[in-house]
Length: 332
Image (cartoon, rainbow, N blue to C red; front, side, top):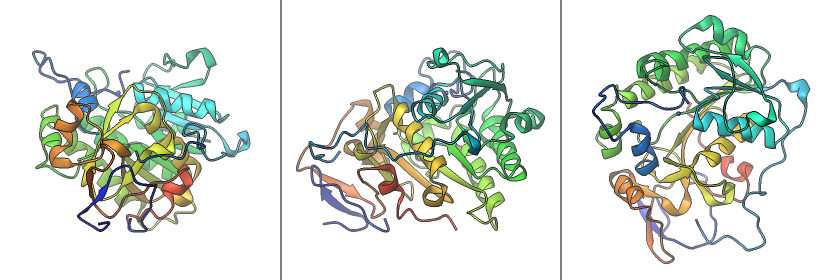
């Protein structure tokens, strides 16, 4: 059956329902004797249907507007693993990009492409203003680290600093990389990750503050998108047709940083569809309820054809990013 709280059978056709961390990107435990770092659990714990053979999942990407007059996309936390993939996703689409970091020099995987670099310390509002001025969109891929600041300073206050600067500078779109299960303090993933500097508690505080800041602002002028990935992997880009979005923070799975980056850039390109929304993302065939997703991800399980899968009623799937963005419920 296909209804809220029901089940569906894995391996069916694509469907959609209208209700349907580099220094900046990683958080290291303050307990030096903790061998299992937060980033390891993120890869393991938080987080496809049968695709027609004629669809190339990597190439099934919406055409972007290749116009430098629109300004660059500014990636906050560009030297982090996810942030660096965001830089690469811009480059692959022919979009001008500025990769920011506290040191001001981009050292990520796409350094040979010579993207522009800038200094940006999210705990210092003055550096934020100069880094993002003139941008068409901003992607916030920064997170707490020993060198960069606590979760409270980066994932909460730092995010709010960036949001305020985006609003002040009339930047059309702010895309935020958050985390799945962030609203569920009783879930195993939240409880574990929050041991590291209250990272989950600070992330949701930052999210909520951003949503409050954007209330009353015309979405056609300036907006935001909150993306909550499942467990991050280093796998290759799969593309939109292999992904599932959900709203309500009831399920998660695994997803590559490359696919998270693609979602971030496409959300920045299509703020009319993704703006003013919050959603979770993961490979469709890794989807599990929050109470069991940690175990499933550790074992790298995937749904088998014919297996019943939990359905929240708010899933989004499609062949392109515009497909999976269409019908997302606005936050307010």
